[in-house]
Image (cartoon, rainbow, N blue to C red; front, side, top):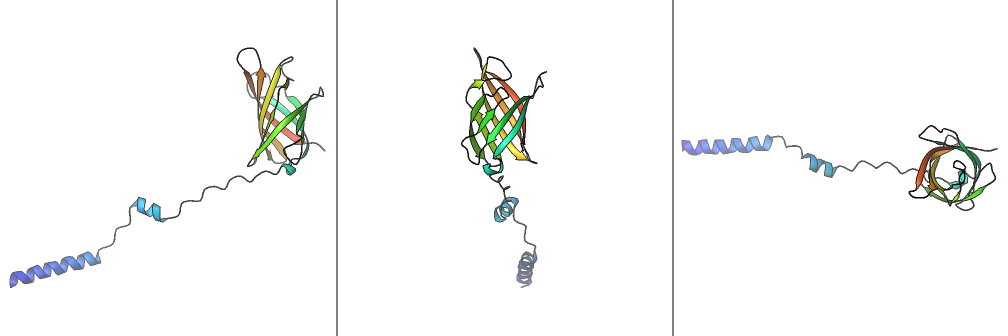
Length: 162
C-alpha cells in the first residue's frame, strides 16, 4: 500500500504542477495573425485641376551636363483635362494631353519644334505636383533624330501668373 500511496501522491503532484504552470505565449505567427494589420498609409488625395486652372510661367532646366540655361514657357491650364497648352516666347503653341493620378499631373505633348535644339522636333512628357503655390516636377524631352532617339531630362518649375 505504501507503493500505491506514493504513486497517487506523485500523480497528484504532477496534476497540481501542470494546473499551476504558466501558459506559454502564442508563437509570433499566431500573435501576428490575431492582431489587426497595421493600416497602410492613406493614398495621396486626388488633385483637383480647378486648383491649378489659369496661366503659369515655367522654366525647365537640364538636370545634367554643362547647359543650365532655362527653357521658358507658359502653361495655360483649364479646370478639366481639355484645352491645356504650352506657349513659347516664339509664339509656338503646343496642345497637351493631361491626366491626373493622386497628387500628380502628367502632361505630354505631340511633336513640335524644339526651343533648345534648333531645327529638331521633340515630344515632351512631364509629371508635376502642386506644392507651396508652385507646380514643379520633371520633364523628359524625346528628340526626333536620325538613328536612336535622343532624350534630355529637365527640372521643371512654374509659378502662377497674375
